[in-house]
Amino acid sequence: MMERIQVLLIEDDEKHRLQYKEYISSLRSTVEFYVADGEAKGLALVQKFNFDAIILDLELNKSDGDGIMFLDKIKQMNLPKKPLIVVITYNSSDIIHQRARDKGADYIFEKMKRDYSPALIMGFIRSVCKDQAIIDNRKNRQKPVSLRDDIERIINKIRINEDMLGRPFIIRAIEIIATSKKKEIKPYRDVYPIIGEEYSKTVDSVNRAIENAINKAWVTTDKEILDEVYPRVVDGAKGAPTNKEFIFYIAEQIKKSHKA
Image (cartoon, rainbow, N blue to C red; front, side, top):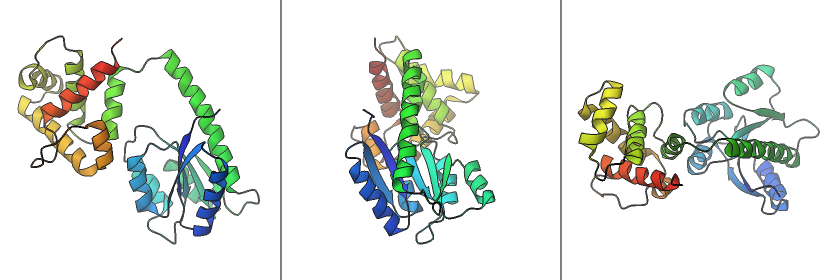
């Protein structure tokens, strides 16, 4: 039996949304289905959930934004995993189709084709997701997830992105703490100097960059995700955990998950 998959439909046409909902209901519990009628709601849902697939209407004329803009924005989000993106459109222009592919669309279905239907789209998605799951399972059996991969997965989830100066410092700090044999570790004595030497930065600049990245994550990431990753009480005045609180907590979780 195929595992449950998460699918997001971004479609501005109410009739088409209803057709998809009716078809999905016939699949019983194999698909966890979410619907957005425009770009803004779609992006908000993408921040909350790690979708396996996104069905994207290219025009969105009856709502906000458009499919091309959505593809641009989702590309900048550095998601933990890239969803399969299936574009649906009345537009038959090869130029527009190629533009969508260049922006990250994996496959394009034209709505005016005689065989177009929710069943066709969902059949395609479920087939691809099943094949991908088989590939992923093989990879997982062949290669255990590394400690660094786990760290990156967590900080990706709270949108500490590659454009943030503090991202590599946070990754390295968590790695140092999680692998240290010392009973007592102090950031300014045992962690930041190592990072500063590796990246040719002062200890203070390492500390500031980490703090800025954490603060930005706590402003831009959905609260449910923050609470999932860091379920501890945060100082209300600061609005985010301190550097030490965050990196030590994540390091401890990583250490536990990688114990034999």
